[in-house]
Image (cartoon, rainbow over all chains, first blue to last red; front, side, top):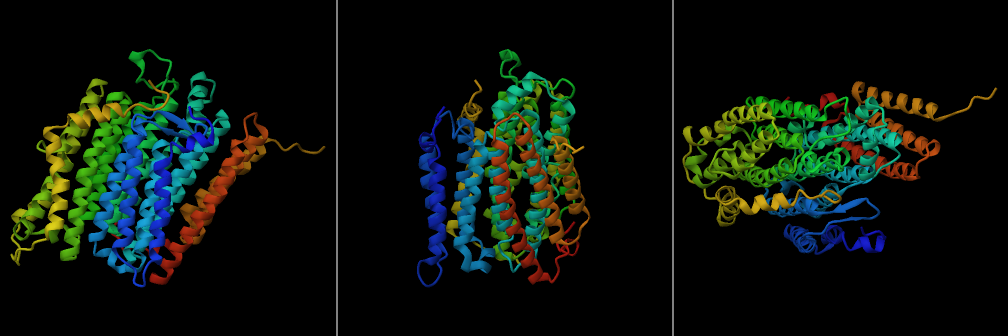
Length: 498
Length: 104
């Protein structure tokens, strides 16, 4: 364990690099008379790439730094890669977005906020202290409040940001109150120390229940789990597409990383027999597993059922992302290594398919100025390649075989069956069937509705290349998924858990 | 006989503040009043942290948390006020109920 602050600095180089590039990106606003569109974007990309180099040097590191505040371990390493890839893709999307032209004088601020959100997500993935968890959550939240209302002349974006900030500030306030109760009960903020206090079993069950439920309010809002999901549809619909895409992956993945780490380290009985290593301990009176299972069922069912009636593509993807939070929570129910590695693998799939779908939504909005599903009518005749790519992404979101989404779901269900949660697996499969209806509805509009104007529209080489880059792994990883699987299996390792 | 002020008194004050904060967030329509409700919640948590550190046998970390939370509350208030100001310029209202262009 690196104890001194000086030693610890060696472990946060990626975050330090991102912070430096945040400032540099902001400074590009001063360069030249006319504000360039490409210079800040290039600076942000460079920042992500350089940070990526430093992240790669950390492979295999397993340390707790800054006196137990922050863990640099394979688990957070996995999420850092996810955040960096998402950041790079979002910067590329943003360059192509027409929506952001409305704020063309503020590109530098926009990209620096993207970087600051990523820094917050990095810290969320490694936070092993309740104060650190709260601070990093707020860093992500505050950046995303501003980003979601970034096109501030657009009333819809304004509405998105005010709804987001009110829900977000309220939930994180509840979480802070929960942390304060937990601190009073245990006298500890470090989650490893919390685990020891829990294991001693001398705490009032009811008070712990209240504190953890309050904490779940903050975490549940970040991953948009029912009943803390109300902001999701409005924010995703109102915010610029690039920002919705960014929030749907980075912010959610960071929330899940924190949730998994908190539950896994604070609640697992480390001293138990290896066969029992995945068991939840400590609270004899109440069964946490069932609470999470109910939360998961509610989340995916509500997300999928409400999505059936949506006519706006971004709103549909918002409900779909709620449903996916439900699927992912299924992995948390097991809390075995297998369940967690299935969740991690699902994140790779989720990144590819969700960003792909949002990318097409952005392209269509750029060209046809519509986000309605009816606006996709006849897209299969007008731009066959775009329609084909969207079909692949939507099938992947459903979890239909020739796509990576299928493998992700398969491993989640397998982990559930291994731990005898067969009823939950059945609910998950039924939900996937329901989701097929609304995903295929989009495909039906694209191919079975004849357009009035059949003129072919080509989106250009760069766009086609970008779509291919997102689409190929969706299919290729279905055929050859063992590298991702072994990566996910190696990444369940957290500091202090063997 | 002078009354001794102990941990319980602080916790009661904090619980009352917390409840008032939730009440404010839920019932108020004005965005500024909602912000004040949120500030009450954060301050309730702060009172908890400081009282636990003062009366408990634990280390000083609770007071450190309180300092961080004060700074964060200021940052959050700044962002929320900026957003509310922008809403007011665009729609001429600060009533959160009237900001409902997006489908529900």
